[in-house]
Each structure stands twice: as structure tokens, then as C-alpha cells.
Image (tube, rainbow, N blue to C red):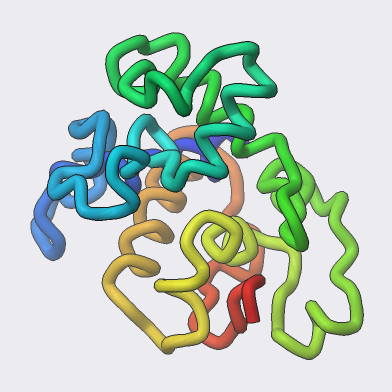
Length: 175
């Protein structure tokens, strides 16, 4: 689970260059979205890149903070930043299971999930975090990048990768 968390958050905050020999050593470079174009002022911040007013509201409610009124807390306070990332990781939202339950195999796909090729594994976590863009569209650089970071952390921690790493053929949870 730790490798999965670090793999996803390293991709979300990467400063590396795709294709370089040290590509997967560049996570945790950016604490907020570079172009700030997604849902201003609720653009991506923190290790998970918390995005959208509804996520800021839900995370703020869970943490007892006014993140809607002060979204910059997610990028200026390191403790708040990681609390929001851990909140997102641990919390099921809408029709999406939590990343925690997926990586531990505690999530049982429904018939609709099975029909959409959504299964427990690292791929399911990518689908939860950014499936609307990266899943169900075949092989893509972002998905390859997430998997590369995950494998790097698995290797560092001496654990296997498991199965179901990519979401190339999965429909996202919104479909």
C-alpha cells in the first residue's frame, strides 16, 4: 500500500522528464498544479492534487478546516497537505471505493464494475484518482508514468507488483 501511495503521489507531483534514465526519481517536486487551470481557485494542490470545490469541501469537513475559504492551506501547510492526501486515499467517494480498500483487496467489484473491467489492483487506484482522463483510452504516458513510480517503490520496499497495473481498458467510474 505504501508503494501504491508513493507511486501515485510521486506521479501527481513529478518534476521529472518522461523518458529520461532517472524519470522515476522526480516525484514530490511540485506542491500545486503548474498551470492552475483546473477549477480555479480549487486547482490541484498537495500530493494527491486535490481538485474541485467539492473535494476541498469534503476534505475540509473531514479535517475540521475551511479549505473552501482557504484552499491555499493544501499547498502551504505540509501537515494539511498530507492530511488531505491521506483523507482522499482512505475515503470512498460517490460510486468510487477508497484507494485503501482497492489496494488491500477489500473492495469487491459490482456487476457494473466487472462489465467496465474495473478490478482490484493498482489500476483501480489510478481510475479513482484520474480515471476520467487516463483510463479506458489505451496505453498513455501518464498511466505508464504512474506504473513506473509504483514499480520503483515496490522494488525499494522489496515487495511484488501484483497484477492489474494499468487501466488502459477500464471504463472510468463516471461512465
